[in-house]
Image (cartoon, rainbow, N blue to C red; front, side, top):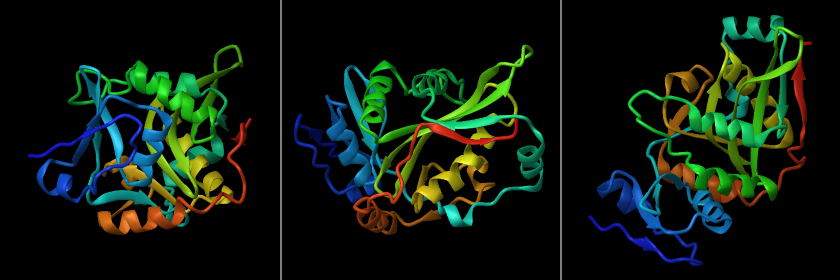
Length: 240
């Protein structure tokens, strides 16, 4: 097994083919997690999965789970919830809270979180330069005030949105956030949503798996295309 060390300030990644065939997708290890490293990784279909002893581990997965916005499926139960439940879905209203809650979520088979403080800082920097975005779902509390109930965040490069993590503090909150975010992203020009992992939750929305080479071909084309409309800091949908 040959796992390369990625030298600082050199943001080139090796072709993931060897990692996918021989290293369970582990493409390389670095001591840095800056904006240049992250943007280069995502453009290549690679993402950071965890850190250990001050080093960051970069992975690719194949086949790749993606969602094409125009193929999104909303089930009858969720569609009813979207119509009848009072909520507000916003974008970029509280990135720090969203990534903090994602880090705190207890996940089956995991003793901790990969979203350690270094990751939160790195993605916050991406958010400050317009390459990371959060979507928030707000419910009313007992006093009639808006309270964060769920959401998710991800990275955006060109016309690709790379979903990273989601959380829910109340029933249906992450589903509502995602269901409202997808058409919003599509209207801005997003043509592909990277879901990374195949899950039943995403499959219900119509995610599908494609070969990694096809995924990389799509990234090469779509990452270079600017969004017709920027992703803002605004209310996406409200039923209040």
